[in-house]
Image (tube, rainbow over all chains, first blue to last red; front, side, top):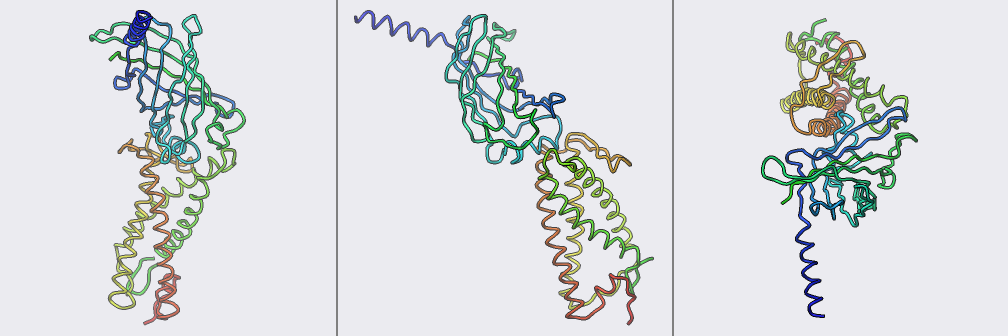
Length: 188
Length: 181
């Protein structure tokens, strides 16, 4: 019984030791948080958040990461048009003075096979916290040429603006925003 | 046409009242247009006109200042203190106007885009001069607009005071009446 407990404790600590921490490489800009939303139903408007930070846990060779959290500076929204960005930062949309940060904290990550995974977690945006599900997959991992070790993932999700109390009327085709996420982490 | 010691001259009088009309209309339009619904017919037109008129008024005001400095201004009324306060207020109105023109220009040109003035000509951007330019310029534009409206309201009240209490020619002169000594 004692032996079993010891073995269990050892294997637990081993698996914890194996799951390395990765810091998302925002410094080198090998990560981006992009969004797109329909414009009137005729085309896609694409933009991104320039300032964010985060980290994830990942075990070498595993099909999935084990947890991830990201904090976004909402005032860094960039749709390549100053007047529109000003509007998006204002209280019709993100209200960045009141809600300067958006946050995603994963709760569970499920391996879906074929390199696919589902990341479920809480997204806090515009002062509202809601559970969302991100479809993600690993892009690759390995040593970088400068002595480090990196792993990268891509994910996509869709959120409804009104779920986060953003109710400015952009028309019936533009009630949902799609997020396209690309992160590369450097193992610590 | 020119202002002399006895009157403002029709050119400055016209510019003065045209500016007064424009400033109040632009203030109302500015507050109204930022809350427009995305599907409003005015959503694109109102800001386009606001920017166009603002830049034209900037050019007119620049001319006005130059024109005002050539030639002599008519006699001032009231006590020395009143005259000094009035001159200071006039100076501040000009400063607020130019701050308003500049801050408005800096909002729309923060990403390098030019401003089309009524599809007539284009004023190019100077590029992004400071970080968060559109937001900082936007706040300045908003508060300076309110300050200007406050100050010109005082200006108008002072003109009425000259007219009704002091019974001098200050207001009549700005309405084009020649001063009779």
